[in-house]
Length: 300
Image (cartoon, rainbow, N blue to C red; front, side, top):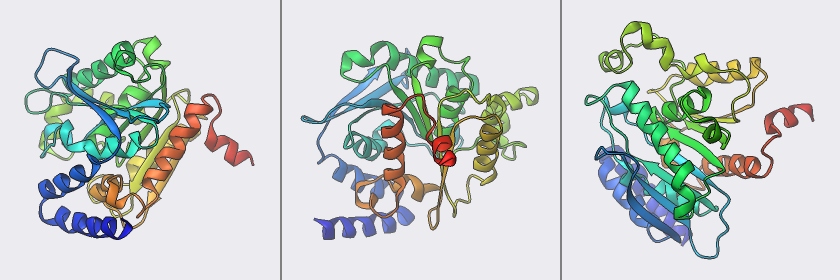
């Protein structure tokens, strides 16, 4: 089995460079063989993209909490794969006892940031209101995302005005993979359209909403990333620490923007400690919801 996983892992890396579609098909096909329950295409709004999938740990596994995962794709400004392409993320987390919700959301050029973040907000509110009816934990929610999806999850975590107070109180932590959190000045034309007009740019930057009282943050970054600059991770983590907030950072050599997410795929889960770092964060804050692990580690 280990040999087969190594072969599949090598195939994944090769296919990723040649054809992302084939690579995703391969890792998701492998993920489907695992023990979890999928409930697909549940409506959380009226638009055709206001749909989400729920994944629950399989029979015999205890449920710990719920992770809402937002995928990336430049908010629609570059090629974007929908929720069905991220089955491998669900497998990685359900195998450790976490329910996973993956929503689709409206994207540029159909809509701009206000509508995109509103879809993200509504999907989380749906989990709070209806998640328990589908077997998820609606009281203990972690927000997680990759790239532009990490930006959306960070905005909901750091700017508490988006979610209802009772929903925000249930957000136990944030996990960001290669997220843009402090990316002004905007350099791409599509970004200026998404986040414009110019006087609204600052309201799109998660770093501008740090207060030190937000839920714990785990910021992950591949040192070979040429898509999102490392200043995003440094700026946000420094701002949170300066405000006496709770943040951990993990930097991985030899991983780029896509590799970081690919490390959650079953053939590659043991190649780097990305998944184990995420699970350690989830496990800790599921059990110890009021004690900042980073601060406790520093004290000792």
